[in-house]
Amino acid sequence: MPERIRLTLRVDADGKAALGHGKIRLLEMLAETGSISAAGRAMGMSYRRTWLLVDSLNQLFKAPLVATRPGGGGGAFLTEEGEAVIRFYRAIEQEASQASAQNLDRLAQLLAPERAECP
Image (cartoon, rainbow, N blue to C red; front, side, top):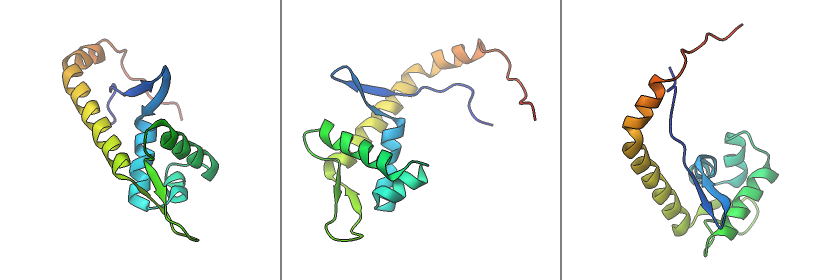
């Protein structure tokens, strides 16, 4: 059974959403698959949407997070900066979850009972 309540983290930069669990998961899938298109497919996104997200991440940071290999079918990979961004985000996420665990439990106790889904 899925958790009823969980903390999600979004990092804003210059007043705009910069990083969240979706973009981090995309970077992780890209590292796993070695391909922008395969990472997007695994997440149910079009190639265009995937490429736009990767491009926005590359432009947000001083150095690109994702690099492509030259040549047809060369694939893509995370740079050292891309790997660092994932590590930092996951560490922040874990610290925030640990720090808020007691209050999240209290908040969960205030939720209405789960309703059964109608067929």
